[in-house]
Structures are given as C-alpha cells and as structure tokens.
Length: 403
Image (cartoon, rainbow, N blue to C red):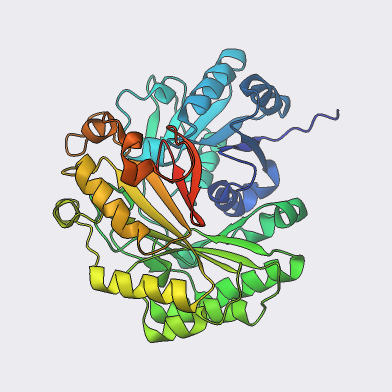
C-alpha cells in the first residue's frame, strides 16, 4: 500500500457507515490555504480500534482532529490514548458535543492537546495556523478554545466534499439552518441563542449540484425544519419539482406547526419520499412544563391526523424515558396516546445526563420493569432492552439512548 502523508488529518468515528461526518467536512471546507494539506478519514464503531489507530498513524499527520460524541466517546478515548502512546509528537485536537459543555472528569483531556468547544468551522483552521506558525505553546492541561458563533455567510459550504461513493451509498447530511428556538431543559440545543439561516438560494444551488451528481438520500439535520413556513415551503417545493422514485428526504419537525401552505406541498409527495422525525418527548403536561417543552395537544392531534390520513409521509415519533416528574404510569399513558395517533415508528430514548446533572434522573423510571407493562410491550413480539417489535404495521424502537 502506498503511504500518503497528510499533515492535518480529520478523523471521524461514525455510528454507522450510512451517515457520513457532516461536521468534519465543514472543517475541511473552511481550511482555506491549508486545504491541500488536509485530509479526512472516516471509520465506524464496528471497526477494530487498533486498526483505526494504525491507519491514522500511517498518514504521518502532524495534527489530528477528532470529534467526540456520547455514542463514540469511549472509542475516541482509546484511539487518542494509543495515538499519544505511539506518536506523542502528534498534536491532538478534540471537538464535538461531548467536550463542548463539560470537561471535568473527561478522560479524553488526558491526551488532548487542545479542546475546541462549540462550532469549530473557523476555529479549527485558525488554530492550525497558530500551531504551524509556532505561536501555540504546549501546556500541561489541554488548551480550551472557544469563540463567537460564525456568521453563516462567512462559511464555505462542504457539499462538494461528498464523494461519488457517498452519494451512491450513504445519506447525505445537509442543513439550511442552525440552532433551535425552544428551551427544552434536557436538550443541548436549548443553549442556542437563536436560529440562524443559510442563504436559501445559495443552499438550493448546492442541492441542485448534489442532485445532478446523483444524490437522492438527503437527511436534513436542522433542529426545527418547519419553524419558518416560507422556508419550509421553498425547500420542499424545490425537491418536489425534481421528484423521482429514488428520492428520500428526512426532516425533524415541530409537531404542532403545519400551516395550510406547508400541508399543501407535503400532500403532493409520493409514498417513500418524506420521513418526518417528530419529537414529542412527553405527553405529560406537568413534565412538559417542568422541562419547558410545550406542545399544543389539539394541534398535534390535528397534524397527526392530517399526516396519516391525507399524506404519504412516514412518521417517526420520539418519546424520552426518565424526564423529571415522569412516572412509569404517566409514561405508559403517554405512549398509549401517541400510539393512538398511528405513527409508523415510535422511538423510545433514555434520557442522557451529564455527570453532575442534578435536575434530571432517569434512574427511577428505568429501574422499573418497564418492558413487562402491557401497554408498552404487548406488541406481538418479545421486547428486550434493545431491538424492534411490530404491531399493526407500526414499528417501535426500544433503544438504550435517544438520538
């Protein structure tokens, strides 16, 4: 094998092959004059971590940037430790949600030279320039870099970095906005100050290029895609005009916001083209008030009825186990109410908390014998702590963590 030297190596440890790393492509797209010295390597959790380390070291990088998430942190810690064990001279930069909000007690800090917190689109390239210029000085603890949110108009979009293999075999992650207007107490997105939008015409020009290159599987990572009816309509209409049998679009939607303008365009899509991920999280009014998650139930019911009876949309609905104030009985009641709305999938996620989080605890509800409750597990198949079961065409994903 020919060894290729990559001075700045971006490394992603993805949950599955299906979804490529969107964030690291943004970093690469914004490297500026360092672009030609930068490369990307993607791995999955199923791969042997020692072989991942071997492949990284084979590139002889001077700087390694890696993203840490709740679902890959243990693997990333192992990789970081081995990188520093075999090549301590490598400058290791870690970013991602797992290090952006809490560092105390994080094992990754034992090996990281630098931690970048928050949106690193421009901060990573700036740090690489400082490192190569000699202005960065080593410290006994990792240096923490933060900065203001980048102006979206200043960012180079990353869509040209999707390869032909990506477009043919994987879901292409895209975004037309960042941030979330809601303040749900359990969610990191509640820390966002506002919602920022990319220039929609520039965005759609990028989508046109991807479409012409053969992309047909699009996953929008916007936290609330239907927040703006006009923007929602504009994007959906763009894809409806290019509809074909292979097109698939995934959106995260607010459950009680489907005005007539949006309903009209949704109803025109054929079966298999649209999937809506609708995060209800709880149907307990007191719990919803406690976590600042407000849905207007009458509108939710009306929108679900519209989606199930008048459209071909595939509905993926989310509930969270362990929210503060939720009991097994109230959760079961909420589950039954959601089931009555006939979504195609219900995903049950267990609340994830930080080490020192004193506001939310999943322990009391999770320690109950949850899956023996008839209203939760009487689905025609035996349910364990992880897996799927079916009832009357609906699929229920019983998962160890929410996504």
